[in-house]
Amino acid sequence: MHAYELAQASWPQTAIAEALGVTQSAVSKWLKAAAGPEALRARNSPGRPVKLTAVQRETLVTLLTQGAEAHGFDGDVWTSARVAMLITRQFGVTLCDRQVRRLLRQLDWSRQTPTRQADQRDEEAILRWVRERWPTLKTAKRARRTILFVDECGVYLVPAVVKTWAPRGQPPVLHQHLTNDHLSAISAVSPEGDLYFQVQRHAYDSMAVLRFLEAVHSVVPGKLLVIWDGAPIHRSDLVQAYLIENRAWLQVEPLPGYASDLNPDEGIWRYLKYVELNNQTFATLGQLESAVNQALQHIQQLPEIMKATFREAGLAL
Image 1 (cartoon, rainbow, N blue to C red):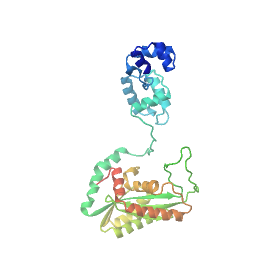
Image 2 (tube, rainbow, N blue to C red):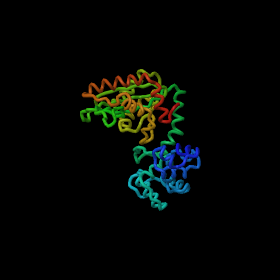
Image 3 (cartoon, rainbow, N blue to C red):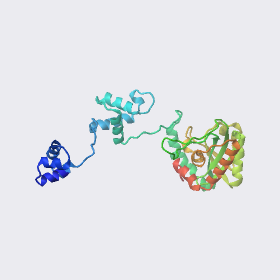
Image 4 (tube, rainbow, N blue to C red):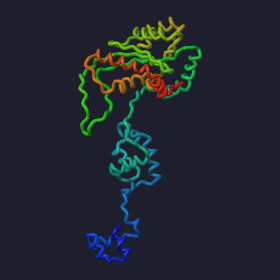
C-alpha cells in the first residue's frame, strides 16, 4: 500500500524500494497487480472449489439419505471415507477427506452419534397410539381419573458420566469400584407434574409393583389410569387378577412394544442419573440409596421437569 501511494506521488521504483527496504522486483510486482488500493488488500483464500455441480450436490443428498447400507456398506453410518467412495463411484470425482467434510458441512450435515433402536419396534403402531389412543386416554381426566405413567429403573454404583470443565488435555478421573450392585426404583409421574416413587435394594416383581400402586392410591384419591410398558411383571397372572378385582378404581393401559420414548417416566430416570447424580461415585449401596432418595425428593419439587418429560414424549395435555 505504501509503495502504491509513493508511486502515485511520482516516486521512481528504485526510490520506493530503497525507502521501504524491499527489492525493486517486489515493487514492480505490486504495482503491476494494483488496479487501485482495494486490489492490494489481503484476502482470505476460499480454497479450491469442490468439484461437484449444483445438480450433483442435490443428487448426492438424495443418495446419502438412502443410507449407507443401501449403497453396499456394512452398518448404516456415513464416514468421510465412505462419502468420498460414493462420490467417486457416482460422479467420477475424487475428493480428499478435508474436501468431503467441507462439502458435508455446506450441505448442512454434521457428525452425530447414532441412536439405538430395537428391530421389533413398530413405528406405525406407535404413531397410531399417539394419534388415536392417547387422545382417548386423556379424556380420563373428565371422569376424575388421575393419569399416571409408571416405570421401573435400576440405579448402579457406577456413575453416569457427563462432560465437565478441566484443563485442556487433563480430563478428570472418577475413581469407581466396578460392580453390578444396584438399587431398584419405581416411580409414577402425572401430566400435572406430580411424582411418586419407591427405592429398594432388590428387584421389583409383580407383588412389589402392586404394593407400589396401592401406596400411590393411598395418597391419590379417586380412580387411577396407569400407563406402562409390557414388561413381564406387568402382565403376570397375579397382576391380571388384581386388575379384575380392583377395576373400580384402577385401569391399566399398555404402551406399544419397544416404545420407551413414549413413557415420560423414562425422562425422570434420565434426569435423575445425568443431572442430579452425574459424575458422582458412591462406595456403598447405602450411600447411593440416600443420594437417590434425596435427588428424587428434589425432583418432586420441580413440576416443570415432569411437564417437560411429557412434552419430550409428545404427550403434553
